[in-house]
Amino acid sequence: MAGRTFTGHIAVFSTSLLLILNFLVTLGGVASLVIEFVIEHKPSRTGWLLIIVAIFTIASGLVGLCSSTRRGCFTLQLVLLAFSVVGLIAAALSIFFKAHQVLSHLSPKIAQNTALKILRVDAAILFVTFCAQVVVLVLGICVNCCDLNDHYEDIEMNRDMARTQAAADKRASMKGESKAAQLAEQMKQKYGKWADNGSDKNTTK
Image (cartoon, rainbow, N blue to C red):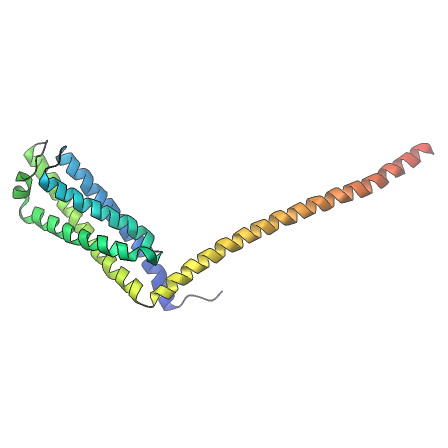
């Protein structure tokens, strides 16, 4: 089997990297959503904005997990990425530089100091998720606009061929075992009768 070309190695590496980054993006969105409900049991208007950003981020990550190996979902992911990236950086910068003002627009059910610390943790998560989204955006555009598409299609085709070959081998193995069992049964019936006839003759003598 021929080794991969340099471009082929890049395609495989980018596939794995996109999967990991989209998984991290999804986790970041879920973490931000959970933090918002920890701070507010009944979200305020500002809280709902943070929730919407988290939902777009989660949706973008989930679609990205599909589009990292299948290009058909990339257009939808691109739209979700645009909303997610803008929302993430706006929310992160607002909390970083105006944490007290953002907190005043929320309705925290916990102590102010604790809520402020949790809000700053949320800002860090939002910023890290934003960075991951930017890398996903750049890498996704490169993959879908460059020659790496052919390598992605080759990867998908090779996977399909491998699954088809495995299924064919399994069927052939089962068919071979069935034929062997039938042959063994026929031999048993044929030579078993001869053995029985020989033993009957010996008994008669």
